[in-house]
Image 1: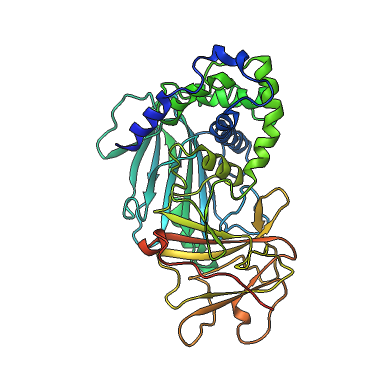
Image 2: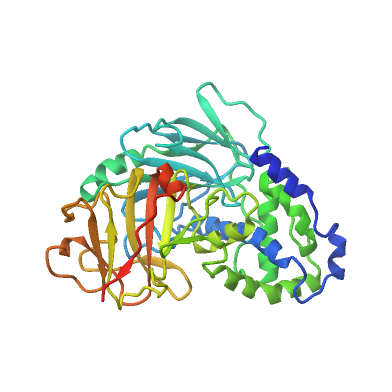
Length: 444
């Protein structure tokens, strides 16, 4: 059974029957409201990001155009939480109700790159790049759920089950001196409408306040209405009609009041890093294996939507993060740490990096301002000092270290922090967890 069959079966089952059952539910916290919230929240968050992007927030621009961010992210970049410092980004929001949008990708078999396509449920439904297409580019038509045409010869169709799609491009930069060459490749990723289609369809509901039940449901239902046909994850909305979720569905006053009580609690629950039940090994929190292609795991989908959309599937990249150290104590810039990478480095076929973040009170994380403008350390960092056996000791602390390993300094903030290890094109031993990421150790 393939993934589409699983989704179809999940969408066919009903929790509450018809929407007319609304008044029979408790107006305080109805049963299974949490499940409805987990399903709906990513739609609201994606719509909010899409609407902000159209205003020039940095995650894209007008519909069906591409924006290239040609600089590496630094401490001033706050368009997304937990940005990487390894690649330059390209972003586009596609609106497909009027027909396909053409994406042209270059071919490059030497430099890592990826162009990922994400539907409004935050699932990656297609990737172009080093792994997925062996570095081969070409012409691609991204088509919505109701398009029934045929592409010309030499054009591949990438089918989305939602009419709104986020495109995220990443091009590896091998240090500041490589930035111009990376930009040259990046600028060859283009987006353009196909044929004489009309203007992109605007939103009927604008995301203003996620804790306002009228606004929350209006935006979620607008997203669903923008993608008719009941394809993919949209088919799973039917069981949640009792909660006011669905194209053309309206919630009763009692249900709106129930949402008013629940939404602040639901948002707060998503801030718990353990909500998605991650694997924790030697103080590292591994992303679940269905990251970026969530299936019917709405709890994980919603958690990731709050903490930072755009994650790639595990075959493309793995993300490991640590908040406590190996002893279970929360890590902080008030303490110094040591991390030893064994000889041979992290088992990847592309690259790896360890990035430092300042942890904000609301759970978001951003790169740390520091005197040497180093935001991460990885296999492309120049001038690192290795041990005689080929292993690498990284010094993690707020103040600059002295001595022969000073070149291996990863500056930390003065307070709460988070470390993230990215492994692009992880090898099998890392994907199946037989190779373990070494623990972060406190320096006494």
